[in-house]
Image (tube, rainbow, N blue to C red; front, side, top):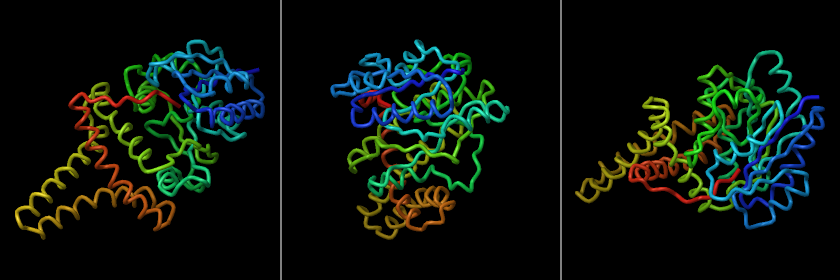
Length: 322
């Protein structure tokens, strides 16, 4: 019988970890594989570690480490021929594993990640932001350049081949890791026939903006580790351009040129509109397009701020969590 080791980094996820572990166990049982649950805790102050132990998980308590290091420490004690990395607030579907094992056996792909959706209770901005990456089921699963690490599945030898996650990255470690997997020949498949639920959605605007600010701080580190490329430079440069247009708009307004200021402001709206149309056109939902337009406008401003702060060696303090 095959064996899968499921590694889950965690920080203060008592609300979700039981659901995450139970769903993972059910999926392994449905696929008829032995299941090893490994939770790597980053120093939680809640009951998360105790709850994880009640579900039979091995719990490693390792405060102060970054997210890549947590995943690597969990993998170091894993014994399965299959590895899965799941965030502590993600509920996997019961039919998660069997079809992916079949796809891997047929030679079509090597590393897998399921699309995410939010529960019905999520606020509109959290739901809209998640839906931007969710493809309709009519769109077939497809090979991609990189995958997010909210859920990843692969054979152990791929992890060993690239040496695991980069332990120096505060965020963006999933993109960096899967880009290296692809460079070493792995075929990465984004799967949308099944959907995982993300229960750790943002409860308020402050949390949404804080998470985006934190996420956008990874661009400079990715450029340092992977070198200059248009793919990695595109979004930071776009966000800086929006900031420049904002500055020009304020300057024009102060100099008494309101028409010029209006033009500059209009130009800051265009990138967000293009991104929102590109991501929502597959859903054919004008409401979603408008929601994403506003969210992208905010994200571009947050990304510009995060990039500038990272150039100034600013480091956001945030515990590593799944």
